[in-house]
Image (cartoon, rainbow, N blue to C red):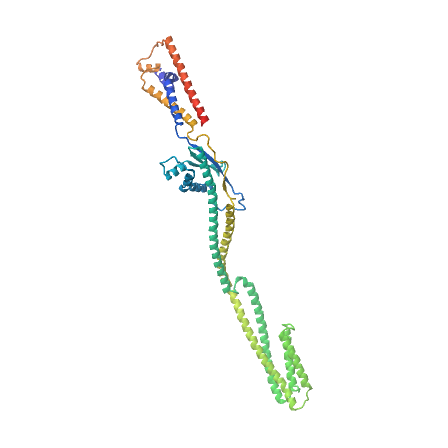
Length: 522
Protein backbone atom coordinates (compact mmCIF):
# COMPACT_ATOMS: atom_id res chain seq x y z
CA UNK A 1 0.00 0.00 0.00
CA UNK A 2 2.76 2.54 0.84
CA UNK A 3 4.46 1.60 -2.40
CA UNK A 4 1.30 2.46 -4.39
CA UNK A 5 1.05 5.80 -2.60
CA UNK A 6 4.67 6.56 -3.40
CA UNK A 7 4.13 5.55 -7.02
CA UNK A 8 1.13 7.90 -7.34
CA UNK A 9 3.10 10.74 -5.75
CA UNK A 10 5.97 10.17 -8.19
CA UNK A 11 3.59 10.43 -11.15
CA UNK A 12 2.22 13.82 -10.04
CA UNK A 13 4.25 16.98 -10.91
CA UNK A 14 6.45 18.08 -8.04
CA UNK A 15 6.05 21.88 -7.96
CA UNK A 16 8.19 22.10 -4.84
CA UNK A 17 11.06 20.58 -6.75
CA UNK A 18 10.64 23.01 -9.64
CA UNK A 19 10.48 25.90 -7.20
CA UNK A 20 13.64 24.66 -5.56
CA UNK A 21 15.35 24.60 -8.96
CA UNK A 22 14.27 28.20 -9.56
CA UNK A 23 15.66 29.26 -6.18
CA UNK A 24 18.94 27.52 -6.79
CA UNK A 25 19.42 28.27 -10.53
CA UNK A 26 17.80 31.69 -11.04
CA UNK A 27 21.12 33.40 -11.69
CA UNK A 28 22.18 30.70 -14.16
CA UNK A 29 18.83 31.28 -15.91
CA UNK A 30 18.69 35.08 -15.92
CA UNK A 31 22.20 35.60 -17.24
CA UNK A 32 21.67 33.43 -20.41
CA UNK A 33 18.28 35.11 -20.93
CA UNK A 34 19.95 38.49 -20.93
CA UNK A 35 22.87 37.33 -23.06
CA UNK A 36 20.58 35.67 -25.66
CA UNK A 37 18.36 38.73 -25.86
CA UNK A 38 21.35 41.04 -26.09
CA UNK A 39 22.95 39.05 -28.89
CA UNK A 40 19.82 38.93 -31.05
CA UNK A 41 18.72 42.49 -30.34
CA UNK A 42 22.23 43.83 -30.76
CA UNK A 43 22.54 42.15 -34.16
CA UNK A 44 19.62 44.31 -35.38
CA UNK A 45 21.86 47.34 -34.87
CA UNK A 46 24.75 45.76 -36.74
CA UNK A 47 22.96 44.32 -39.79
CA UNK A 48 22.71 46.54 -42.91
CA UNK A 49 19.65 48.78 -42.85
CA UNK A 50 17.08 48.48 -45.65
CA UNK A 51 14.27 51.00 -46.34
CA UNK A 52 11.15 49.99 -48.26
CA UNK A 53 9.15 52.47 -50.35
CA UNK A 54 5.79 51.35 -51.66
CA UNK A 55 2.76 52.70 -53.47
CA UNK A 56 -0.73 51.37 -54.13
CA UNK A 57 -1.92 51.21 -57.74
CA UNK A 58 -5.67 51.05 -58.21
CA UNK A 59 -7.19 49.07 -61.09
CA UNK A 60 -9.88 51.36 -62.52
CA UNK A 61 -12.63 49.90 -64.67
CA UNK A 62 -13.46 51.39 -68.11
CA UNK A 63 -15.34 54.67 -68.01
CA UNK A 64 -17.60 53.55 -70.85
CA UNK A 65 -20.29 51.00 -69.89
CA UNK A 66 -19.62 47.55 -71.27
CA UNK A 67 -23.11 47.48 -72.81
CA UNK A 68 -22.03 50.34 -75.12
CA UNK A 69 -18.39 49.44 -75.83
CA UNK A 70 -17.15 45.97 -74.91
CA UNK A 71 -13.36 45.67 -74.37
CA UNK A 72 -11.52 43.45 -76.85
CA UNK A 73 -8.46 42.62 -74.71
CA UNK A 74 -7.68 39.84 -72.27
CA UNK A 75 -10.07 40.21 -69.34
CA UNK A 76 -7.94 38.08 -66.98
CA UNK A 77 -6.23 40.85 -65.06
CA UNK A 78 -3.99 38.49 -63.11
CA UNK A 79 -2.53 36.94 -66.26
CA UNK A 80 -2.08 40.34 -67.89
CA UNK A 81 -0.49 41.77 -64.73
CA UNK A 82 1.86 38.79 -64.56
CA UNK A 83 2.86 39.37 -68.18
CA UNK A 84 3.42 43.09 -67.54
CA UNK A 85 5.50 42.27 -64.44
CA UNK A 86 7.71 39.90 -66.42
CA UNK A 87 8.27 42.57 -69.07
CA UNK A 88 9.11 45.24 -66.50
CA UNK A 89 11.44 42.88 -64.60
CA UNK A 90 13.27 41.98 -67.79
CA UNK A 91 16.97 42.72 -67.96
CA UNK A 92 16.58 45.50 -70.52
CA UNK A 93 14.04 47.47 -68.46
CA UNK A 94 15.87 47.02 -65.17
CA UNK A 95 19.19 47.96 -66.79
CA UNK A 96 17.63 51.27 -67.84
CA UNK A 97 16.63 51.98 -64.22
CA UNK A 98 20.11 51.01 -62.93
CA UNK A 99 21.84 53.33 -65.40
CA UNK A 100 19.33 56.15 -64.95
CA UNK A 101 19.52 56.24 -61.13
CA UNK A 102 23.11 54.99 -60.86
CA UNK A 103 22.11 52.15 -58.57
CA UNK A 104 24.68 50.03 -56.73
CA UNK A 105 27.42 52.46 -57.62
CA UNK A 106 29.32 51.51 -54.45
CA UNK A 107 29.34 47.82 -55.45
CA UNK A 108 32.49 47.91 -57.54
CA UNK A 109 32.85 44.18 -58.00
CA UNK A 110 29.36 43.64 -59.36
CA UNK A 111 28.70 43.20 -63.06
CA UNK A 112 25.68 44.63 -64.85
CA UNK A 113 23.90 41.27 -64.62
CA UNK A 114 24.56 41.11 -60.86
CA UNK A 115 23.15 44.60 -60.39
CA UNK A 116 20.04 43.70 -62.38
CA UNK A 117 19.55 40.54 -60.35
CA UNK A 118 20.00 42.47 -57.08
CA UNK A 119 17.44 45.05 -58.25
CA UNK A 120 15.01 42.30 -59.23
CA UNK A 121 15.27 40.71 -55.77
CA UNK A 122 14.55 44.03 -54.05
CA UNK A 123 11.29 44.53 -56.03
CA UNK A 124 8.03 43.08 -54.80
CA UNK A 125 4.54 43.19 -56.35
CA UNK A 126 1.64 42.20 -54.08
CA UNK A 127 -1.95 41.80 -55.29
CA UNK A 128 -4.87 43.26 -53.38
CA UNK A 129 -8.09 41.25 -53.83
CA UNK A 130 -11.66 41.93 -52.89
CA UNK A 131 -12.66 39.79 -49.91
CA UNK A 132 -16.10 39.07 -51.37
CA UNK A 133 -15.41 37.90 -54.92
CA UNK A 134 -11.61 37.56 -54.85
CA UNK A 135 -11.22 39.96 -57.78
CA UNK A 136 -8.06 42.04 -58.08
CA UNK A 137 -8.87 45.62 -57.19
CA UNK A 138 -5.33 46.99 -56.75
CA UNK A 139 -1.71 45.94 -56.33
CA UNK A 140 1.21 47.27 -54.33
CA UNK A 141 4.65 47.95 -55.81
CA UNK A 142 7.53 48.08 -53.34
CA UNK A 143 11.29 48.46 -53.49
CA UNK A 144 13.89 48.08 -50.74
CA UNK A 145 17.19 49.97 -50.64
CA UNK A 146 19.76 51.19 -48.13
CA UNK A 147 18.90 54.79 -49.00
CA UNK A 148 15.26 55.85 -48.39
CA UNK A 149 15.40 58.51 -51.09
CA UNK A 150 16.72 55.99 -53.63
CA UNK A 151 14.00 53.54 -52.61
CA UNK A 152 11.39 56.21 -53.31
CA UNK A 153 12.89 57.09 -56.71
CA UNK A 154 13.03 53.47 -57.86
CA UNK A 155 9.45 52.85 -56.71
CA UNK A 156 8.32 55.90 -58.66
CA UNK A 157 10.07 54.63 -61.80
CA UNK A 158 8.51 51.18 -61.38
CA UNK A 159 5.06 52.64 -60.80
CA UNK A 160 5.25 54.73 -63.96
CA UNK A 161 6.47 51.69 -65.90
CA UNK A 162 3.46 49.67 -64.74
CA UNK A 163 1.02 52.43 -65.71
CA UNK A 164 2.61 53.06 -69.12
CA UNK A 165 3.11 49.39 -69.89
CA UNK A 166 -0.52 48.58 -69.09
CA UNK A 167 -1.74 51.28 -71.50
CA UNK A 168 0.70 50.08 -74.15
CA UNK A 169 -0.17 46.41 -73.72
CA UNK A 170 -3.92 47.04 -73.80
CA UNK A 171 -3.62 49.24 -76.88
CA UNK A 172 -1.43 46.69 -78.68
CA UNK A 173 -3.75 43.82 -77.77
CA UNK A 174 -6.79 45.82 -78.85
CA UNK A 175 -5.18 46.85 -82.15
CA UNK A 176 -4.02 43.28 -82.71
CA UNK A 177 -7.54 41.99 -82.14
CA UNK A 178 -8.91 44.56 -84.59
CA UNK A 179 -6.32 43.65 -87.23
CA UNK A 180 -7.05 39.95 -86.82
CA UNK A 181 -10.80 40.49 -87.20
CA UNK A 182 -10.20 42.67 -90.27
CA UNK A 183 -8.15 39.88 -91.86
CA UNK A 184 -10.89 37.37 -91.09
CA UNK A 185 -13.46 39.82 -92.46
CA UNK A 186 -11.54 40.16 -95.73
CA UNK A 187 -11.34 36.38 -96.02
CA UNK A 188 -15.08 36.14 -95.34
CA UNK A 189 -15.74 38.86 -97.93
CA UNK A 190 -13.84 36.92 -100.61
CA UNK A 191 -15.72 33.73 -99.71
CA UNK A 192 -19.04 35.60 -99.78
CA UNK A 193 -18.23 37.09 -103.21
CA UNK A 194 -17.41 33.61 -104.52
CA UNK A 195 -20.69 32.22 -103.18
CA UNK A 196 -22.61 35.16 -104.62
CA UNK A 197 -20.98 34.61 -108.02
CA UNK A 198 -22.06 30.95 -107.90
CA UNK A 199 -25.64 31.97 -107.16
CA UNK A 200 -25.69 34.53 -109.97
CA UNK A 201 -24.14 32.08 -112.43
CA UNK A 202 -26.70 29.43 -111.52
CA UNK A 203 -29.58 31.90 -111.87
CA UNK A 204 -28.25 33.03 -115.26
CA UNK A 205 -27.97 29.44 -116.52
CA UNK A 206 -31.44 28.50 -115.24
CA UNK A 207 -33.15 31.76 -116.11
CA UNK A 208 -36.90 31.16 -116.38
CA UNK A 209 -36.79 27.87 -114.43
CA UNK A 210 -36.09 29.32 -111.00
CA UNK A 211 -38.43 28.61 -108.08
CA UNK A 212 -39.18 32.31 -107.75
CA UNK A 213 -40.50 32.31 -111.33
CA UNK A 214 -42.93 29.43 -110.83
CA UNK A 215 -46.00 31.65 -110.50
CA UNK A 216 -45.13 33.67 -113.61
CA UNK A 217 -44.37 30.45 -115.56
CA UNK A 218 -47.75 29.01 -114.60
CA UNK A 219 -49.46 32.24 -115.63
CA UNK A 220 -47.61 32.37 -118.93
CA UNK A 221 -48.33 28.68 -119.56
CA UNK A 222 -52.05 29.23 -118.93
CA UNK A 223 -52.02 32.18 -121.35
CA UNK A 224 -50.22 30.16 -124.02
CA UNK A 225 -52.69 27.31 -123.67
CA UNK A 226 -55.54 29.78 -124.07
CA UNK A 227 -53.91 31.23 -127.19
CA UNK A 228 -53.34 27.72 -128.51
CA UNK A 229 -57.01 26.89 -128.03
CA UNK A 230 -58.03 30.07 -129.87
CA UNK A 231 -55.61 29.38 -132.67
CA UNK A 232 -56.90 25.84 -133.04
CA UNK A 233 -60.49 27.06 -133.10
CA UNK A 234 -59.57 29.66 -135.71
CA UNK A 235 -57.70 27.00 -137.73
CA UNK A 236 -60.70 24.74 -137.70
CA UNK A 237 -62.92 27.60 -138.88
CA UNK A 238 -60.44 28.47 -141.64
CA UNK A 239 -60.35 24.86 -142.81
CA UNK A 240 -64.12 24.80 -142.94
CA UNK A 241 -64.07 28.00 -144.97
CA UNK A 242 -61.52 26.47 -147.33
CA UNK A 243 -63.79 23.53 -147.99
CA UNK A 244 -66.69 25.90 -148.45
CA UNK A 245 -64.75 28.10 -150.91
CA UNK A 246 -63.60 25.11 -152.89
CA UNK A 247 -67.21 23.86 -153.12
CA UNK A 248 -68.45 27.26 -154.27
CA UNK A 249 -65.77 27.53 -156.90
CA UNK A 250 -66.62 24.11 -158.28
CA UNK A 251 -70.31 24.95 -158.31
CA UNK A 252 -69.68 28.33 -159.88
CA UNK A 253 -67.62 26.78 -162.65
CA UNK A 254 -70.26 24.15 -163.40
CA UNK A 255 -73.13 26.63 -163.32
CA UNK A 256 -71.25 29.24 -165.31
CA UNK A 257 -70.83 26.71 -168.10
CA UNK A 258 -74.62 26.45 -168.35
CA UNK A 259 -75.02 30.19 -168.07
CA UNK A 260 -77.66 29.92 -165.32
CA UNK A 261 -77.70 29.14 -161.68
CA UNK A 262 -79.98 26.66 -159.98
CA UNK A 263 -82.73 29.19 -159.26
CA UNK A 264 -82.39 30.91 -162.61
CA UNK A 265 -80.34 33.83 -161.26
CA UNK A 266 -77.16 34.77 -163.00
CA UNK A 267 -74.14 32.88 -161.81
CA UNK A 268 -72.36 35.92 -160.52
CA UNK A 269 -75.11 36.94 -158.10
CA UNK A 270 -75.37 33.39 -156.71
CA UNK A 271 -71.64 33.32 -156.09
CA UNK A 272 -71.81 36.69 -154.34
CA UNK A 273 -74.69 35.53 -152.20
CA UNK A 274 -72.76 32.45 -151.22
CA UNK A 275 -69.75 34.57 -150.46
CA UNK A 276 -71.86 36.94 -148.34
CA UNK A 277 -73.29 34.00 -146.44
CA UNK A 278 -69.83 32.63 -145.77
CA UNK A 279 -68.50 36.00 -144.64
CA UNK A 280 -71.48 36.60 -142.36
CA UNK A 281 -71.00 33.13 -140.85
CA UNK A 282 -67.33 33.90 -140.27
CA UNK A 283 -68.23 37.29 -138.74
CA UNK A 284 -70.70 35.64 -136.39
CA UNK A 285 -68.05 33.14 -135.28
CA UNK A 286 -65.43 35.85 -134.74
CA UNK A 287 -67.86 38.11 -132.88
CA UNK A 288 -68.49 35.31 -130.37
CA UNK A 289 -64.79 35.31 -129.45
CA UNK A 290 -63.56 38.86 -130.06
CA UNK A 291 -64.75 42.43 -129.92
CA UNK A 292 -65.53 44.68 -132.92
CA UNK A 293 -62.06 46.25 -132.67
CA UNK A 294 -60.33 42.93 -133.30
CA UNK A 295 -58.45 43.10 -136.68
CA UNK A 296 -60.00 39.92 -138.11
CA UNK A 297 -63.51 41.17 -137.27
CA UNK A 298 -62.87 44.48 -139.02
CA UNK A 299 -61.36 42.65 -142.01
CA UNK A 300 -64.42 40.41 -142.44
CA UNK A 301 -66.75 43.40 -142.13
CA UNK A 302 -64.80 45.18 -144.91
CA UNK A 303 -65.05 42.07 -147.14
CA UNK A 304 -68.82 41.90 -146.50
CA UNK A 305 -69.22 45.57 -147.49
CA UNK A 306 -67.12 45.05 -150.60
CA UNK A 307 -69.07 41.95 -151.64
CA UNK A 308 -72.38 43.78 -151.16
CA UNK A 309 -71.21 46.59 -153.47
CA UNK A 310 -70.18 44.01 -156.10
CA UNK A 311 -73.59 42.41 -155.82
CA UNK A 312 -75.32 45.76 -156.31
CA UNK A 313 -73.16 46.50 -159.37
CA UNK A 314 -73.88 43.07 -160.82
CA UNK A 315 -77.63 43.50 -160.34
CA UNK A 316 -77.48 46.91 -162.06
CA UNK A 317 -75.75 45.49 -165.18
CA UNK A 318 -77.90 44.55 -168.30
CA UNK A 319 -78.93 40.93 -168.59
CA UNK A 320 -77.51 40.46 -172.14
CA UNK A 321 -74.90 38.13 -173.50
CA UNK A 322 -72.57 40.95 -174.34
CA UNK A 323 -68.91 40.74 -173.65
CA UNK A 324 -69.17 43.22 -170.78
CA UNK A 325 -71.70 41.06 -168.99
CA UNK A 326 -69.51 38.00 -169.40
CA UNK A 327 -66.61 39.80 -167.90
CA UNK A 328 -68.78 41.01 -165.02
CA UNK A 329 -70.02 37.53 -164.35
CA UNK A 330 -66.47 36.16 -164.21
CA UNK A 331 -65.48 38.67 -161.51
CA UNK A 332 -67.05 36.66 -158.60
CA UNK A 333 -65.05 33.58 -159.63
CA UNK A 334 -61.84 35.53 -159.38
CA UNK A 335 -62.92 36.87 -156.00
CA UNK A 336 -63.70 33.35 -154.78
CA UNK A 337 -60.35 32.14 -155.93
CA UNK A 338 -58.65 35.10 -154.20
CA UNK A 339 -60.55 34.40 -151.01
CA UNK A 340 -59.56 30.73 -151.24
CA UNK A 341 -55.92 31.73 -151.62
CA UNK A 342 -56.20 34.12 -148.67
CA UNK A 343 -57.87 31.36 -146.70
CA UNK A 344 -55.03 28.96 -147.45
CA UNK A 345 -52.49 31.58 -146.38
CA UNK A 346 -54.44 32.07 -143.18
CA UNK A 347 -54.45 28.32 -142.56
CA UNK A 348 -50.67 28.17 -143.05
CA UNK A 349 -50.20 31.13 -140.73
CA UNK A 350 -52.46 29.55 -138.11
CA UNK A 351 -50.55 26.28 -138.32
CA UNK A 352 -47.23 28.09 -137.88
CA UNK A 353 -48.66 29.98 -134.91
CA UNK A 354 -49.93 26.76 -133.37
CA UNK A 355 -46.53 25.10 -133.84
CA UNK A 356 -44.83 28.07 -132.18
CA UNK A 357 -47.30 28.04 -129.29
CA UNK A 358 -46.87 24.29 -128.82
CA UNK A 359 -43.07 24.75 -128.74
CA UNK A 360 -43.35 27.50 -126.13
CA UNK A 361 -45.81 25.44 -124.08
CA UNK A 362 -43.43 22.52 -124.19
CA UNK A 363 -40.62 24.82 -123.10
CA UNK A 364 -42.54 26.15 -120.09
CA UNK A 365 -43.72 22.68 -119.17
CA UNK A 366 -40.10 21.56 -119.24
CA UNK A 367 -39.18 24.44 -116.95
CA UNK A 368 -41.92 23.49 -114.51
CA UNK A 369 -40.90 19.84 -114.62
CA UNK A 370 -37.25 20.69 -113.98
CA UNK A 371 -38.11 23.10 -111.20
CA UNK A 372 -37.82 20.61 -108.22
CA UNK A 373 -34.28 19.61 -109.20
CA UNK A 374 -33.39 23.23 -109.88
CA UNK A 375 -34.82 24.25 -106.52
CA UNK A 376 -32.73 21.60 -104.74
CA UNK A 377 -29.54 22.72 -106.47
CA UNK A 378 -30.34 26.36 -105.79
CA UNK A 379 -31.01 25.57 -102.11
CA UNK A 380 -27.60 23.90 -101.82
CA UNK A 381 -25.85 26.88 -103.37
CA UNK A 382 -27.97 29.40 -101.43
CA UNK A 383 -27.28 27.60 -98.14
CA UNK A 384 -23.55 28.11 -98.63
CA UNK A 385 -24.18 31.73 -99.54
CA UNK A 386 -26.35 32.32 -96.46
CA UNK A 387 -23.71 30.77 -94.20
CA UNK A 388 -21.03 32.96 -95.73
CA UNK A 389 -23.33 35.98 -95.43
CA UNK A 390 -24.05 35.24 -91.75
CA UNK A 391 -20.32 34.77 -91.06
CA UNK A 392 -19.52 38.00 -92.86
CA UNK A 393 -22.23 39.95 -91.00
CA UNK A 394 -21.03 38.57 -87.65
CA UNK A 395 -17.40 39.45 -88.40
CA UNK A 396 -18.46 42.89 -89.61
CA UNK A 397 -20.29 43.49 -86.35
CA UNK A 398 -17.29 42.28 -84.34
CA UNK A 399 -14.98 44.45 -86.42
CA UNK A 400 -17.04 47.57 -85.74
CA UNK A 401 -17.16 46.78 -82.02
CA UNK A 402 -13.41 46.09 -81.99
CA UNK A 403 -12.68 49.38 -83.76
CA UNK A 404 -14.69 51.22 -81.11
CA UNK A 405 -12.88 49.33 -78.35
CA UNK A 406 -9.50 50.17 -79.89
CA UNK A 407 -10.50 53.82 -80.12
CA UNK A 408 -11.51 53.69 -76.46
CA UNK A 409 -8.10 52.24 -75.51
CA UNK A 410 -6.29 54.89 -77.55
CA UNK A 411 -8.25 57.58 -75.72
CA UNK A 412 -7.25 55.88 -72.42
CA UNK A 413 -10.87 55.29 -71.50
CA UNK A 414 -10.43 51.55 -70.91
CA UNK A 415 -9.23 49.71 -67.86
CA UNK A 416 -6.21 51.55 -66.50
CA UNK A 417 -3.86 51.72 -63.52
CA UNK A 418 -4.03 54.77 -61.28
CA UNK A 419 -1.54 55.59 -58.55
CA UNK A 420 -3.51 56.40 -55.41
CA UNK A 421 -0.61 57.97 -53.48
CA UNK A 422 2.91 58.89 -54.53
CA UNK A 423 5.63 56.45 -53.46
CA UNK A 424 6.29 56.91 -49.78
CA UNK A 425 9.56 58.22 -48.39
CA UNK A 426 10.37 55.67 -45.67
CA UNK A 427 11.39 57.10 -42.32
CA UNK A 428 11.94 53.85 -40.43
CA UNK A 429 13.91 50.93 -41.86
CA UNK A 430 11.96 47.97 -43.08
CA UNK A 431 14.84 45.65 -42.17
CA UNK A 432 15.92 44.87 -39.61
CA UNK A 433 12.75 45.33 -37.58
CA UNK A 434 14.40 46.00 -34.25
CA UNK A 435 11.20 45.58 -32.26
CA UNK A 436 10.73 42.12 -33.74
CA UNK A 437 14.38 41.35 -33.13
CA UNK A 438 13.82 42.39 -29.51
CA UNK A 439 10.97 39.93 -29.15
CA UNK A 440 12.84 37.16 -30.92
CA UNK A 441 15.85 37.86 -28.71
CA UNK A 442 13.79 37.51 -25.55
CA UNK A 443 12.45 34.18 -26.78
CA UNK A 444 15.95 33.07 -27.70
CA UNK A 445 17.20 34.10 -24.24
CA UNK A 446 14.45 32.10 -22.57
CA UNK A 447 15.39 29.08 -24.62
CA UNK A 448 19.09 29.55 -23.86
CA UNK A 449 18.45 30.01 -20.12
CA UNK A 450 16.27 26.93 -19.99
CA UNK A 451 18.89 24.91 -21.82
CA UNK A 452 21.64 26.04 -19.41
CA UNK A 453 19.55 25.18 -16.35
CA UNK A 454 18.64 21.81 -17.82
CA UNK A 455 22.30 20.96 -18.52
CA UNK A 456 23.41 22.06 -15.06
CA UNK A 457 20.73 19.95 -13.40
CA UNK A 458 21.47 17.04 -15.66
CA UNK A 459 25.19 16.91 -14.76
CA UNK A 460 24.66 17.76 -11.04
CA UNK A 461 24.89 14.52 -8.98
CA UNK A 462 24.08 16.12 -5.62
CA UNK A 463 20.84 15.48 -3.78
CA UNK A 464 18.71 18.52 -3.05
CA UNK A 465 15.44 17.03 -1.91
CA UNK A 466 13.71 14.47 0.29
CA UNK A 467 12.50 12.36 -2.60
CA UNK A 468 15.96 11.95 -4.02
CA UNK A 469 17.21 10.76 -0.64
CA UNK A 470 14.37 8.26 -0.25
CA UNK A 471 15.15 6.72 -3.61
CA UNK A 472 18.68 5.91 -2.43
CA UNK A 473 17.67 4.26 0.88
CA UNK A 474 16.76 0.55 0.80
CA UNK A 475 14.33 0.95 3.75
CA UNK A 476 11.53 3.27 4.56
CA UNK A 477 12.27 6.44 6.47
CA UNK A 478 10.76 6.29 9.94
CA UNK A 479 11.74 9.79 11.16
CA UNK A 480 13.43 12.97 9.84
CA UNK A 481 15.87 15.38 11.54
CA UNK A 482 14.87 18.94 10.55
CA UNK A 483 17.48 21.29 9.13
CA UNK A 484 18.75 23.74 11.67
CA UNK A 485 19.47 27.10 9.98
CA UNK A 486 21.40 29.76 11.77
CA UNK A 487 21.15 33.51 11.43
CA UNK A 488 24.09 33.54 9.06
CA UNK A 489 22.38 31.06 6.74
CA UNK A 490 19.12 32.98 6.83
CA UNK A 491 20.92 36.25 6.05
CA UNK A 492 22.70 34.57 3.19
CA UNK A 493 19.46 33.25 1.72
CA UNK A 494 17.87 36.65 2.10
CA UNK A 495 20.71 38.39 0.26
CA UNK A 496 20.58 35.79 -2.46
CA UNK A 497 16.86 36.24 -2.90
CA UNK A 498 17.16 40.02 -3.06
CA UNK A 499 20.03 39.74 -5.51
CA UNK A 500 17.96 37.43 -7.72
CA UNK A 501 14.99 39.73 -7.76
CA UNK A 502 17.20 42.73 -8.38
CA UNK A 503 18.90 40.94 -11.27
CA UNK A 504 15.53 39.97 -12.74
CA UNK A 505 14.27 43.53 -12.38
CA UNK A 506 17.40 44.97 -13.98
CA UNK A 507 17.29 42.55 -16.90
CA UNK A 508 13.55 43.13 -17.37
CA UNK A 509 14.05 46.89 -17.26
CA UNK A 510 16.87 46.65 -19.81
CA UNK A 511 14.74 44.51 -22.14
CA UNK A 512 11.77 46.87 -21.79
CA UNK A 513 13.98 49.89 -22.41
CA UNK A 514 15.50 48.22 -25.46
CA UNK A 515 12.04 47.41 -26.79
CA UNK A 516 10.86 50.97 -26.26
CA UNK A 517 13.98 52.35 -27.92
CA UNK A 518 13.53 49.96 -30.85
CA UNK A 519 9.89 51.00 -31.21
CA UNK A 520 10.74 54.69 -31.22
CA UNK A 521 13.70 54.51 -33.59
CA UNK A 522 12.27 51.71 -35.69
